[in-house]
Length: 134
Image (cartoon, rainbow, N blue to C red; front, side, top):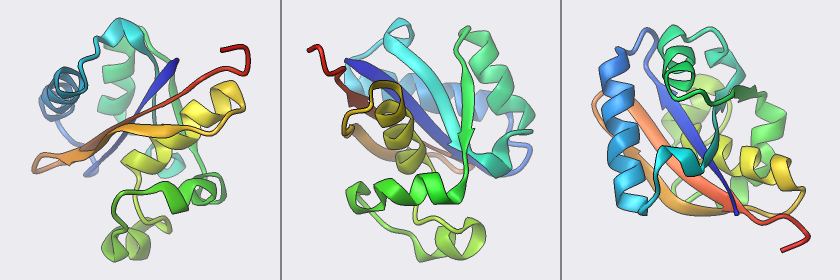
């Protein structure tokens, strides 16, 4: 399986909040960082310095996707936030980014391994997909 982490956060979210949330989510999913392929978010977070720093800390690619990409996995979200939709144009950043990244990596449908978790400043979700050879 290919595992992808999706994250969303407030602008200029401190690295500690992102790191702690990622650690909690990996533990809850029974995964370790070595099993994660990438960390992803929405394209308006492409310059979010601490999301970039988090990915760099673990030597993982940080990829971002636009609204039209993320909308393609909308039917798979565990929860749809009208607030997030009104703010950034998708119903959820963390789950959408995780699902789309995992799907993009294998070309196969992805599934949520861990639904959105959040702390006071960030959200995190984990998705997986299997390559066609599996």
